[in-house]
Every structure is written in structure tokens, then in C-alpha cells.
Length: 234
Ligand SMILES: NC(=O)c1ccc[n+]([C@@H]2O[C@H](COP(=O)([O-])OP(=O)(O)OC[C@H]3O[C@@H](n4cnc5c(N)ncnc54)[C@H](OP(=O)(O)O)[C@@H]3O)[C@@H](O)[C@H]2O)c1
Figure 1 (cartoon, rainbow, N blue to C red):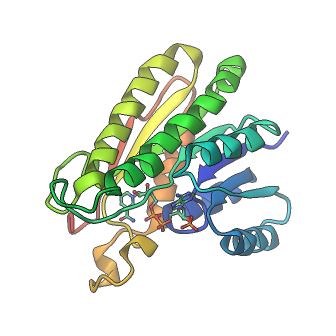
Figure 2 (cartoon, protein in one colour; figure 1 turned 120 degrees about the vertical axis):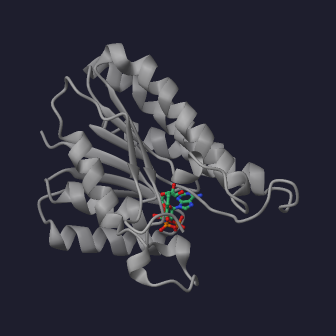
């Protein structure tokens, strides 16, 4: 039976690069985003480049609890993936003390709560199978506070804590858990920012670290991947 990966928010950036990396290895792919059009394009491109694999896409806004749970239920009615990547994230710049009301809730719901609901939907299946690998896409913003990081930084600190707890909970069940903490990566998130492309990491490099961490023997787990642009943080 083919192996499978679920990546939330797979139509762009880091999520998309991870799907492509695992598609190269013959994995079946499951993903979601808020745009049917982007999902259709992604699906078409992946199936024409990797004809042997299955690509399943779902429209879901993971900023809403019910949609996140429905998405997870739709996938779990078909498979328990071998790899789960909680990738979806939104960055709304601002300072905690004066950002528009609602930024905090939207950011935490999208970046953190969605990972909580989706992970919970699959853990029982992982435990039954005594295998599985969960990756959380955090950020270096979850390691170092900086001005204008606001709610985003809080969500990423919390994501790191969430992932550390999961690691301990799932350790006796043969389930590996890894935090990925990237620095600035050239994706749609940086649209409109006037900096040279070589100041950023490539999403493909982040995807490669995920693939490498997945590839270890079951006796070992990479708990944290911190990956930054060679020239340092932006
Ligand atoms: N780029 C960076 O410099 C950087 C650095 C550190 C960490 N990260 C983290 O890496 C992850 C991916 O970032 P990225 O830069 O690759 O982002 P991106 O290029 O903006 O892509 C985000 C993906 O998530 C989907 N998405 C966004 N909001 C969603 C929602 N509410 N429900 C469902 N899907 C949603 C997007 O599709 P739709 O918009 O169509 O829904 C898209 O597929 C995030 O967690 C981000 O915080 C990024």
C-alpha cells in the first residue's frame, strides 16, 4: 500500500514544497486551503508530473473549528496518513498592545487551534498503528520575540509548546514528533517586501529538512529543526 502525507495549507509556499518533495517519493497526498481554484491547479500540476500518486484536496478554512474538524474527518474516513504536517499559518503584522481587535483570535485559531483539532483527529489511528510522524511548522518567531510580531509570535511560541507536549505524550507509542522552526522563506507571505530573493531561504530547502527528518530509522527522532537564511534573520 502507498504511503501518504497530509499537509495543511498545501497550495503555496512551504506546504506546497513539502507535497512536491513527498510526491517525488511516491506518497499519496492530502491537503486543504480556502481556494478551490488553487487546489484544482495544484492537483492538476501534481497529477500530471507524478501520474502514479493519488492527490486529494479539500476546501476548508482552518480558522474555523468546525471546518478544521470536518476536513480532518473527511480525510480520516479514508486513511490514517503516515505523515501529518500542521503547516497552515497566517501572519498579521502588529503589536500586541494596539493591533486591531480580532488579530489575536484569528491568528491563534488558524496557526495553533487548527493543529490541535487536526492532530487529535489522527492520533488514535497513529497509536493503533504504532507509527506516524507529526511535523509542526513553527517559526523562529517562536524562539525570539521581535517588535511587530504580535499575535503571530505568540501563536508560534504556543505551537512549539504544543509540539513539545505531543512529543512526550506520543513517545511510548512509536510516533515521532518534530518542530520545524524556519526563518524567512521566500513565499507568498512576503509579497510586496522589497528585498533580494537571495536574502531568503527557498521553501524547497525547508521541505528537504522535513524529508530528511522523516527518513531516519524508527529509533531516532529529530525533535527540532531550526533553519535560517545563511545571512541571518530579516
Ligand atoms: N514564509 C516564511 O518566511 C515563514 C517563516 C517561518 C514560518 N513560516 C510558517 O510556515 C507556514 C507556511 O507559510 P508560507 O510562508 O508557506 O505561507 P503561504 O505561502 O502564505 O501559504 C499558506 C498556505 O496555507 C493556506 N492557508 C492560509 N490560511 C488558511 C486557512 N485559514 N485555512 C486553510 N488554509 C489556509 C494557504 O492557502 P489559502 O490562502 O488559499 O487558504 C496556503 O496554501 C506557516 O505556518 C508560517 O507561519 C513561514
